[in-house]
Amino acid sequence: MFRVAALLALVATLAACDVLTEGYFKYAKAVESDLEQSTGMKPGVGFSWQNGRLETVTVTFPRIYEARPLGEIAEVVRRSVSSQFKQTPEDIVLAFSLGKPTSGTAAELGETN
Image (cartoon, rainbow, N blue to C red; front, side, top):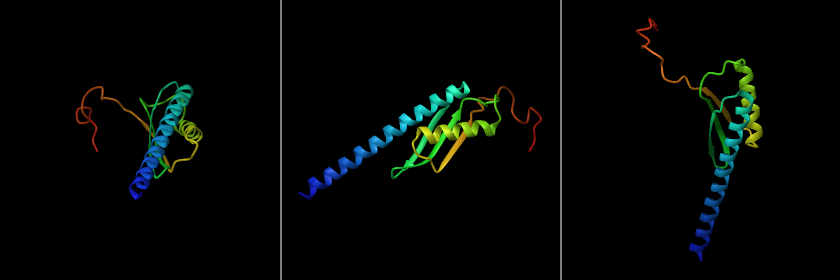
């Protein structure tokens, strides 16, 4: 009897984790769509959660966004994440991909530390 109860508890826990994870993936896709409409660029959205609590959401744009000041875009990201994920994460990380360097190394370009 104990084994059956333990197995049922394990199955219920795994099912709950799957529901949470799938829900978070839907929320991440909704943030991507929302921000693509707002900025014209589709970011990648990732998340980290532990024990059912949303810890971090990372929003990475494919290049630097220059159409608006950074503070404005940060606020747009914050609002989208908070509304789409249905809870406010502990932290939101906003990133921009710099891509592959166009040419030369820092030394060749005359840059020094």
